Length: 305
Image (tube, rainbow, N blue to C red; front, side, top):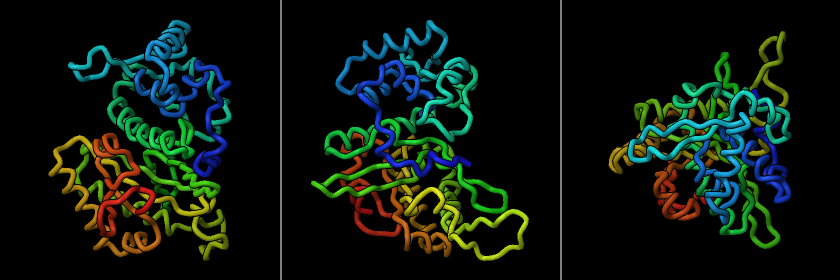
């Protein structure tokens, strides 16, 4: 279980303009696991050129700190996904933003190719939130999106959320800190299995860890999630990889789980739950009314679920 990253305040993790781009690229690849040149440009230098990122990446490859794997799509044969080599992992292991993170999961080209589709889709889901924050003057940057965060949910089981997002809405002098558990669905699992993720979040919401070696008793400090979050993060499903009809049906199945499962219904009374299509948040931005509240209601921005 990570100890500091899940509850890390967003303001502490904004990259400094004074940091060399090379270091920012290494950190981004270590945190996000993998990204294309275009994604790294949007993440780190949205006003910069692709050539600027390419020069840095090519230098990291020539010095043995990064490598690349081609994307499977034949129509994009010139596009590659970048990842860290074992040498790059060792170089970034002690960076403050990466403290408490689980081991880097990519150790070879084969491992990289297996993880490419889901990892790059998760980066795609992050980028519209970062672009929205820049446009609106909010706080959310490359280090405010932490992939693959694990939480205990009891009986020796764990919930691994695709990403934990930290986002601060700024309205004049008012600052509103928001957090989200983000589930990225590429329509590769059954709709029922996707909906069952809500049961896992409900278990996390109610789970109270018991001290080792003691009889089972009510936990004095409340639910285990309070160790990392002052408020339970909202749960956001981002769907892609199928027709609109199929995606709408998957969202309907999520809503049905909220309506019919008592533990999930209890979660929905306390926690904001929403779903949106990835292409919609890319085209319109996450702050538009493209999110479907899983407890019912009209589409709205994710901040208003």
